[in-house]
Amino acid sequence: MKEETIPVTKETVIGETAKLKIEGYRFVTMTCAELDEKQVDVIYHFDKNLQLKHFRLTVPKDTLIPSISVVYQSAFLVENEIQDLFGIHFDNLFIDYRRTLYLGGETIAAPFCKFTVKRTDKSAPAAIQAET
Amino acid sequence: MSKTIIPFGPQHPVLPEPLHLKLTVEDEVVTEVIPALGFVHRGLEKLSEIRDFHQMVQVVERVCGICSVIHAMCYCHGIEEMMGIEVPPRAKFLRVIWSELHRMQSHLLWLGLFADSFGFEALFMQFWKIREKVMDISESTTGNRVIVSVNVVGGVRRDLNSEQISWILTLLKDIEQEIGALKKTLLTDYTITKRTVGKGVLTKHQAYGIGTVGPVLRGSGVVQDTRTLGYAAFNELNFEPVVESDGDCYARTKVRFRETLQSIDLIRQAMSKIPNGEINVKVKGKPQGEVVSRVEQPRGELLYYIKANGNKNLDRLRIRTPTFANIPAILTMLPGMYLSDVPVIVLSIDPCISCTER
Amino acid sequence: MFTFTSNILKNFLSQRATRRYPFETRSPFDGARGMLLNHIEKCNLCSICAVKCPSQCITVDRKALTWECDPFACVYCGICVDACPERALYQKPEYRQVAEKREMISLKGEIKKKVKKETDNGIESE
Image (cartoon, rainbow over all chains, first blue to last red; front, top):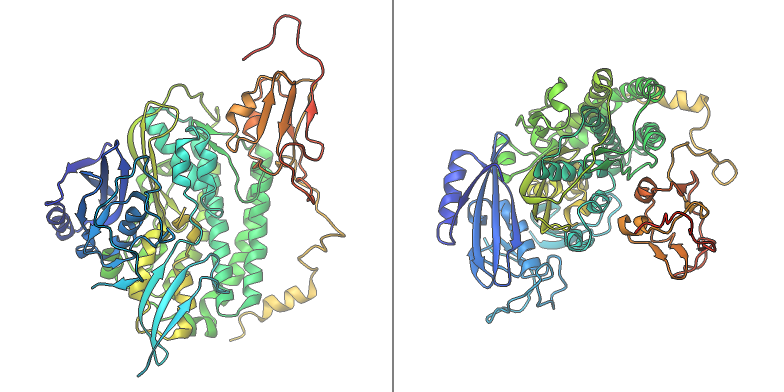
């Protein structure tokens, strides 16, 4: 991509996001792409004055990623969508739908991935709770 | 002070598409909102695994019915940038003309639905009567009223001859006159102002921090319009983003009304500057790489992330539609409002749920 | 207060804006994309239309010499019309009529059986 892309890790993503928020960037969206059997690529897009900036986070499929909804609250919707469709779980979400946003609730496989990795400590789907 | 939980939607007379909101209400004042989506999820992004990148243009147009030509334009821009294809200038101007016609049609539809949400059915019918003229222009020039299918990778499929151009300009004059006749009713009528002024306020700081886009952001005083990036032929046209500073439902209505009149002006400018030439180029090869492309839809900024690795089928296609970014704004706008203001406020962000949950 | 009254009076005194539909119909515009048909005498059975169709509604069988189209799966986009090298496909301006039954392969008059083969000059293309 011709805009600036910064690689981040699971531990540094919240720090880098908070730095961008102080500089005045707004959150645009997140994208998840499956790379191969075991890894996914999560890309964060930010924008200021119509100039984009991206972060790239490459993780194995059964990782627990810290959620950036502590910094940008409106990210909860797209993180829930990634949770549903790709099976990646996020920690500390603002509102956690527990994989019932698009899916029925009984689905274990990740619909958009070609290979699904089973999580060992998956919690059962429950009613929607707001965790502030 | 007793708490009641009231479900708004998924079926509601005011909503064009299903959206579910769980409202916690204390004595008629809303205190908390939790949205729930997922009623029209079709999984269209996954179709890129079996349809090749030329056929995906038709799939992507059908993500949303009201703003379909702009989805196709954004996708074609992304693929053309990835493959290094240069679109002929006449095709760029034609794309601008059709996308501005679509913007007018979408805003007129919204203005009608908005008037219907507080019961003003006569005004609703008048706006849709004007919209029929725009649909006639679409059908006679492209072949279809709503999903027009004129964009292909490499240009457009249909051309406009001079007879059609002069017919469109005559019709646009009539449309402008009729819209102007309704301006006084829409913006100064007592019932309309009583139900929209001061409702659903988003300050400038809140609107930017939540990440809203489109008329919701411009109605709160932030000057941002993705058309100023200069894609297609927009870098050769003169226009300023339409901005209002109050941040309530009335300001958003005014922004959309003024944008409709601005679109008429943009179409006239494009028709006077359109050069002669071909309308498409032949496309050879397969796409490779990663690209992000953005355009301005009637509802806000649309973003496409396309990843390809040299095959006929794309690796990943990700679509971020403007309503997806505007729904978290409902969580800030609704607390503190009366229950009877909820339909008007939810409709003022222009929810297009089929885009949101492609 | 009375901002809308002039509009109401004007509409009251002018003609109705709607058409009485089943009794009066509008003639369709010239370039409108309606039913998909095939001039079978020009068709070469090259199956380019079947490959390019976004909804995969065309089936071409070169052994049985048939060209089939499912009018209920077709989205009437017109890509096949643009792609056909013999200009055999065309679209009428009227839409497909409503029907009582939907059958998987054979439909209301859309199956064309091609009886003669192209044998001169070997014009058959893949």
